[in-house]
Image 1: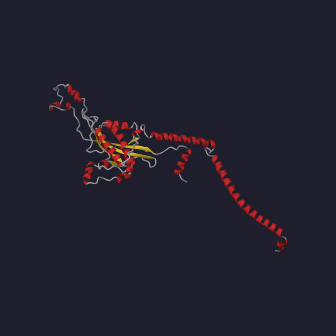
Image 2: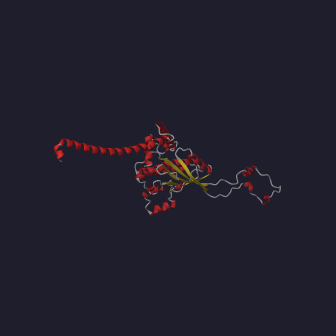
Image 3: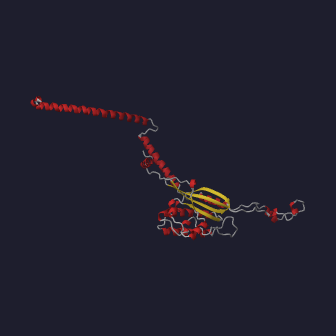
Length: 352
């Protein structure tokens, strides 16, 4: 202590130097530790860089630019494919959705009235000359009995879905009417939004329920595994149509759908006899007497009328009942507008 009192300035200077020396040692230790970490990071980065250079193609600036151009080209091709799925004439589906529930119900009633009237003017293929009118079930609701039978419109939040079904079905029915079948037996529509059925009340009085039971009230169905629906990517609206006619009517109907004015896909076709007919026989095959069954040489030559009748087919084509399931396709996938959008979409689908 005497030294510090005798030489205070010198002692203070020595103390400062000692403290600086200790601080230097601490700094050197910390720097050495940081240097070791930095060296390890550098070595790891160098290995990653050399590994990246060994990739094919290497992530050079030129290759990155080329990759971006490829992404843009693929995005354009994807958008073209998405546009192609909309059909050649997507404007057939109106976008003028009714604003109110009452307007929607009015459109459904007008839809029923129009197609009922048009059915009466059709001349079915294969019908006798002068026979006009395609048969419809009594009080036919064209797939919308849930609303038309009870007079209750769909809930407001489901109006867009029901309106879209009406528009698609209008197009499909026009094609079916053009094929001129004998009768329209049944139309079923798939309830895409399950809450539509749950939210829509059934007719409350007993008489209405009995009437609906008599008509079957089964104009809704589930397409199940036949559907092309992919959650988040593809939505569909399905219909099942049951009608009778000859094979040519079915061919004409399917061929018209192949025109792809709208994105419609035929998912299944079932055929069964509509009614049983006895095989038609030509008049020449009938014997006027038991002796005519034997060629005794004493029979007279056939007349011209008998010869013409003999050329008629022995078996006539019977009416068939056709069940066709049609699905309307809506692709929800959107092509990215640029590379950044593609990266964002990819990162959102594959979170780290």
